[in-house]
Length: 398
Ligand code: ADP
Ligand code: MG
Image 1 (cartoon, rainbow, N blue to C red):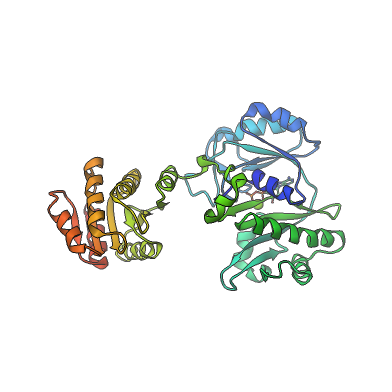
Image 2 (cartoon, helix red, strand yellow):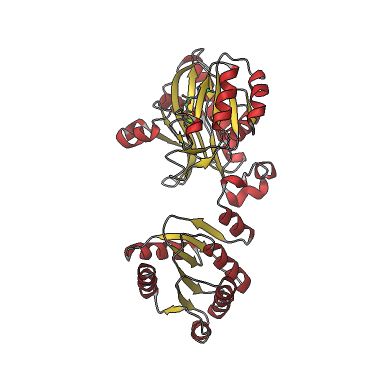
């Protein structure tokens, strides 16, 4: 689960990280009062969406003006007019995709005197199987470019989870960030604060870009992106409260209510599968035969007919879906139960696109029989290759 920048900063503040003062607002009427709470002479008006690259983003609507999703304001009037321009409009960044995201809230923040912009993040490093800091002296809005053209400027420092952030880790991190003097003292303290927040709140990722050295040599967290391990959220009701469903795909929310894993993608073929591995294989083979998956819905190991029907309806809600491939291995879940669920859903949704069903495993013969005798327009497939070819052909023919 992701949260907004202003929320992430509030979390970091609890742990003692240096963040600026700021006020989140949801309507332009609140802009004046928010600006009044901050000292000036520089305010920053920041779009709050679950995507990065806001500073370099562009609004779709002309009324929002030419400037990006993070704007400097040199007077209270500036804060108010920019807030009015930005709220309710659609910001497109390299992370939102071409559709962009509607800006429903802004963070009005105290402006900082920036001397240098650094990059710092914490993540779980799969290569070492340990948490790690990723650091660079080249922080700010061009970090993607740095990663692409000068990857040697991005350093990884792994952390032994038993020992935590030792003096040696903190010192190497400060070396990697090129910190000296007061900034280095701040860096040592910050490394421990961030690690504590990361582990105690079960984060997947914590990214501070930029971390800045200010003109007074103190460090400040100027941007914060945070995502949490969904499997550990039950331990953090305070974090769960921060969920913003308007940032999530409506179908993904509905799927999570049924305990289904639904992922929206860009193609034309809806996929109903069980297990993440089978989902990957199904998507690969669809691509191999020249089409793209529109989504996949993982019904998991123990689904019943209702759950299968729910999955089906969620897949059908995506207007980009031109065909559906059901690819299920019946282990604990029996193929006849899946077949019943599929038929129930086909009837209830008045399915208008081609459907290919490939079943394998427990009670497969019974499952195939149910489908064959249904009288409904369902294309049976014998194996994964056959299934992918059939659905691609059906979608291309349509
Ligand atoms: P994004 O990463 O989505 O583009 P950031 O929060 O990193 O958004 O802001 C983009 C840039 O705007 C920063 O790199 C920094 O130069 C500037 N900026 C952001 N917040 C402030 C602030 N409080 N004071 C001064 N400049 C800021
Ligand atoms: Mg940033």
